[in-house]
Image 1: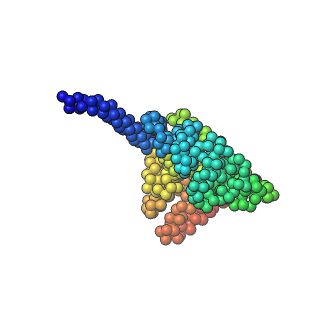
Image 2: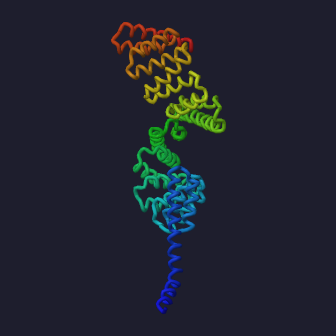
Length: 392
């Protein structure tokens, strides 16, 4: 009996502690489950769910600096920058020298226009990680925003040394040199920004225009400013058409305008997508198939270009330009006889277009038929001179 009493007393004493242990184990299991679901949501691009899951995990176990960092990144993706900053700060309170959390906080401060706050954080980043190119880049940009141009120059120079094809950093470095009146170095960096930047990059032209003006080179300045203004107009039109297609996804005129603009900008990958949307809305419009063919040609996808051109010809069998494009797609594939037939059809439909004769001349040249090649080249020169005379 005494032994039973001992066993009961022992169980009475131990059970509460066992319950506590089980409860803690259950809590940790729920924490792990929330974290796993948060990461799954991030990989799926569902940042809002990731935020909910990481927040739930941190309610259970609040002192995980890694999860606080990931929570901040999810907030950042949703443009909740104040909340992102708060999460990064909590993470850094637990792990003060976490370079990536410091960098993330510096970037968020930059986005919030808190450049004064960004500078010491990013200085800490590059002190801890001397080869952190992104840290130097955002630090330099923050110094430019604060008009601390002389300080920005060595920081941005280090950034482009570590990342030598960063167009935006060259733009900032050019701006810094411009403001400390080192115009030759400013021009050098603005030109590098154009060399490494995307097509139709407007801002370096403005910098070049300003630098040339201050050097007294007015004609060069005027040219650069005209380019800048034209690119700004194109960008404004691109933004307008993009907003319009989002607001009115079935607006065929907006999609057509956007496709035309992208082709003029030589943004062929996006032009392909836009022409495909146009075709989805108006599948029997030959011009859309023709535009798609030209975009594929520019991207050096001749087979896809030929398929689109063939479709255009079927829809509009009497349009000479379509046969000319079709001939070009065949020529790109080495289908010379098919190309010849297409070029001949283009000339049959419109013999006054000089470039039809130029294309067939080149093709005859590849066949070794010098007589016909020269005959069509002379026709090309004659028709081209006539066109120029009419324009004058």
